[in-house]
Length: 323
Image (cartoon, rainbow, N blue to C red; front, side, top):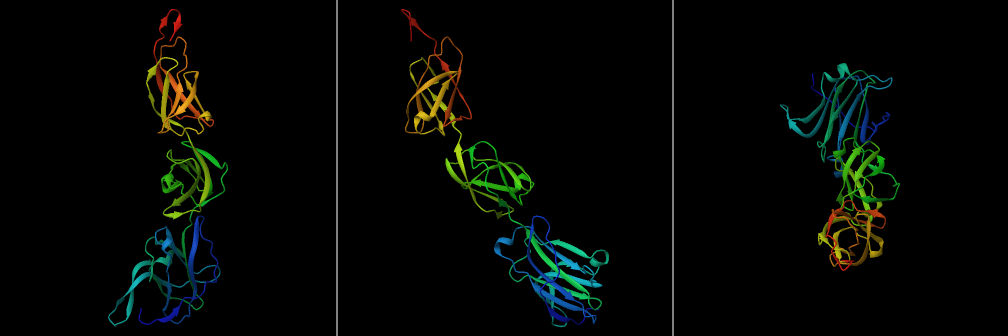
């Protein structure tokens, strides 16, 4: 019968417990020691920080551990309010972590309490057992991800890079990686590595990188990022040797001399730039070719991600001179 209680506040824990890999301890309570004189009630506040409210959180109850016996009965409720009973007293209402049957078959129970904790959350334990019985609890949460120093310290946008650290999700889509605030694509993931594709739109220079898992952010590290040149259009689409060809795109090097342009296998002389970032070259002589020729740009030693087709005009011969 649950009629009267010996009321006790929580004690400082003396039992040892190591959280599972990837989890961190938020708080704990116990051991709550049985008096052997009927039902006892123990309470403890489970306030958590704002950053902990939504990440995966687990409450584990230990009924006896080591050489210490457990209670013969223990009811554990995660409560956020008291409901008035028939006698005018308050009864806890909330998530039942353990009931009268829980510890008949096991000594330990773990409940997922993600999103259930906040200001005013109280753990209420009602237990009865032999003198010296002990019960304790621990609240753990998924540890935040951590990034290790980078090697190499520079990468190219559009090419994969491997980030090292800890506490990543093994599900690629659960890891959010940003370069300079822009989202990267996570190609593969393990607990300690992430293979990511930096966003093509990231600006050249040093980009701060962070990883978030289930809303929990990592530390920030910086990586040098160089954008790969990307070609978008040519003007004109074809023409004779010696005329000017304008190549539009992004990621071209400044100064202009750091860009190497080829039309097919033939190098083209870079002679200028447009106000919107394009580069101008002199169309090279392609000999007797009549087929489309791929145009490529290598900027600061980095080849463009794509090529565009230039269609040469047929050579016209007048008095033995080609033009």
